[in-house]
Length: 277
Ligand SMILES: NC(=O)c1ccc[n+]([C@@H]2O[C@H](COP(=O)([O-])OP(=O)(O)OC[C@H]3O[C@@H](n4cnc5c(N)ncnc54)[C@H](O)[C@@H]3O)[C@@H](O)[C@H]2O)c1
Image 1 (cartoon, rainbow, N blue to C red):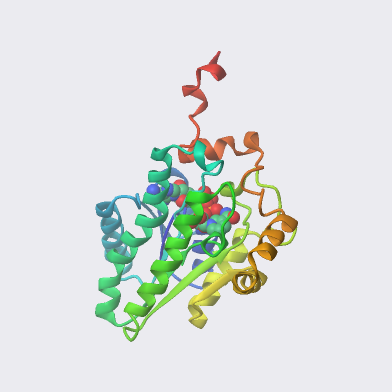
Image 2: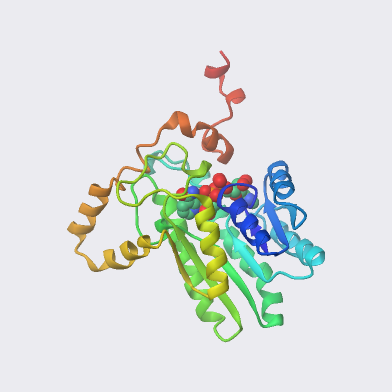
């Protein structure tokens, strides 16, 4: 199996879970050092690759490199993603474009790169990591929600287009997962935060069972399926009562700074004169 964004968080946990099942895993990530350390920690079943999912040539080279090394890809997980948060009107167009390139184009490029070999073989699994934000909308995450709705939409469409090809598609919609991506985020009042290992187990399970909709935790699925049936005023009330209307706005910015620097939402300390002074 091959996974993008596999150096940390959900990606690292998923690579480890597949390796425990005996799979050879290819960890693709922008961050070569962390990817290598993660692969070393997982053991001899894991190999690290450098990939930038925003660059089609880089994704093609990743897929070709993994195929050469592992002799084929039966499971490809489009997991790399970033989540800048904050008021929509304060978001720079550059950051929005960067997010769209990773969260949307990265997944499209991954599918385009790996599907031809799966079609030729008549089988395989494409796992696209979206989010609960792919089914609902949260203040402070306008662009993020747009990208995750796009991942849901493209996976629905690809599943329909490739029906009969033997290829299974899976769309993963986690709630709040304790990784660097959610650092500084207050815990939801209704949907409890979960560990990356729980998402990893759900992905392994979905690939084994062929399940398309993968909500983690499962009760998120009940919320996502029933809320579109409710009147708007009730849906707004649920967002408010659960605290989900503020969770992407009321983040602890100090706790989030390292993450923001990593994804380019904040400048690294050395580039910020007020911190140097
Ligand atoms: N953490 C959550 O609460 C949560 C909830 C729902 C969905 N998700 C989704 O799960 C996925 C993984 O999130 P996470 O929480 O593990 O985040 P994370 O920040 O812990 O890990 C993401 C990894 O992606 C890599 N990456 C970033 N840009 C890349 C690029 N251009 N090319 C290749 N790799 C790149 C990073 O280096 C990092 O190792 C994302 O798509 C995210 O949107 C996360």
